[in-house]
Image 1: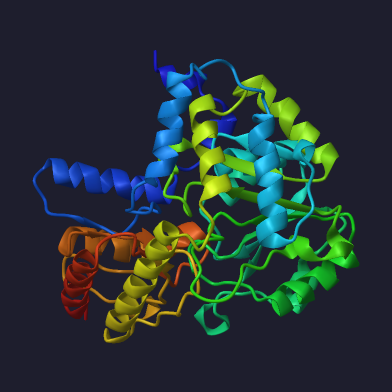
Image 2 (image 1 turned 180 degrees about the vertical axis):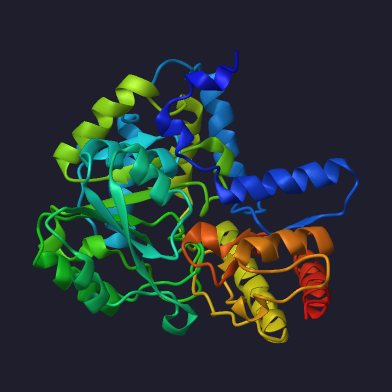
Length: 403
């Protein structure tokens, strides 16, 4: 008997993360001896700061290896509250902070805590690949607002107002954005906030995981506006800014009823984040400011790579990149190549183009369709400058073969 009969409708309705799928396909080709350059994964190619690693080792040596509190240690939650005040001017108590196994779980905790069947969640596109499936898992329905490279992948207040209904329960976005790297200014966030002021039944979920990786000016959070104080949830974590992807530490800062709900939920299916990871996170938040030498150097290198990749993509016929202000991605429009063929491959959409480039150029990218923008593909520049140059050279050669 086929064991797949036991699978739930919930799981059957979900799709594999496009970024993880491309990473898997790249790995399979490498195992066959193919020289694949991977520009698909969203992970800094830097190592965790030494002081953070030492803090984790010390925690092990001091036998800090028992069950931690479900919402996180009090020391870490206080440190996060202090960080939010210090860096962002946001006032949260420690009991409004819940630490989870990565920011991904933090987002899922919020959706599971607030959504009922049929509730609508507004998602600006392009969006991070997991948002729609997360909404679906929690029983909600996604409503998309589309933008293009011409708008630098940012939505307007007018677009937002048009899609709000009585069923709208939440709005989720990221700034800096994955996949576009776009960053909302304070004025742009204030304009969106004024829309939400008129609709207090909407919870705004602000995904700020790329906060530290920005290339000019201070980070701006939509949570800074007092009129939204009880209607905003901030999501953040250590993975991107501190090169701590494997440590799995994310957190939510929220109005207390929502934080309490996330705590209750998390207590039933994962309990607390690793005690060792929390000790490492405490060190990172307390002793490594955004402008520390290690963090500043990482951001500097990302900016150099961005400029290299942006310049090279601009030289390819039909490729239209935006100039991202944060994160480590470029999201160029490549629709010029749709309908073209090399005889073996016919490219009809972004997925076809990514598969073609993987097969022909041995470069792994992620289709824009996965991010709600089929006209684009995502390049991650979380790799060396040499790899970036070689990858774009291969891509340019492969694209020239499409007629």
